[in-house]
Length: 251
Image 1 (cartoon, rainbow, N blue to C red):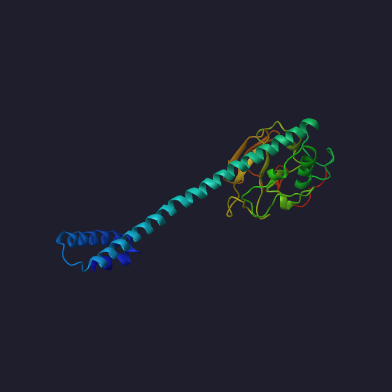
Image 2: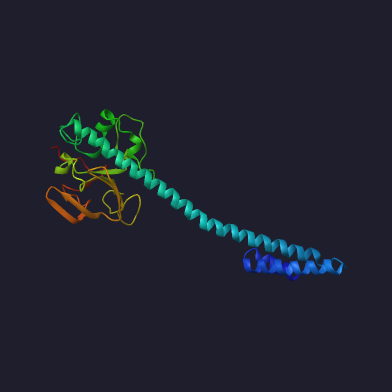
């Protein structure tokens, strides 16, 4: 009886389940040793089974509590690696374009680029330089999707580009100039797809190397101007432009 009394609550409180297994095991051992009537054998066995079930349930829950965060972290790490690779591939694609256009990246007046907004600059790379639309989507970004259409829209781009009016958009040799970064989300607020409270994400620089940045303020260099505290989303000429921003002034 004692084993069953401990075993039932042991389904919820695992130490009582352990106690039920011990008490029940002792009771069954005594019954078998005495070779007497088996009264109480069923209750003792029931206590042992309830206790074992309780311990097993808690073990599974504990295992899940350990494994699920690890799986989520592994999935997040995989997304970060893919995102970093996307950004690097995009910069190399732009460098190919610049090599054919006097070191100029896509912008109004270069090739058939019709505007200096983010979408127009990326469309020319898709059409003329085989940039895959899949590279423009961060798999963690729930608000964008890969397009099968011929022309992009802001709903197909997870990344911001350096303002086309920046002098660095004309020179792809500056490894200290950020060219592409995870976009702000939603537009106008200091957040990204990686953090809803503040912007943080990946940045691809002029020589195609990619870094993870924990905040929007970072060390940059534009022309002869170097800063350790440049906020890349403050809207200046040398800052990032989100894909859903208004069209920039045509050069």
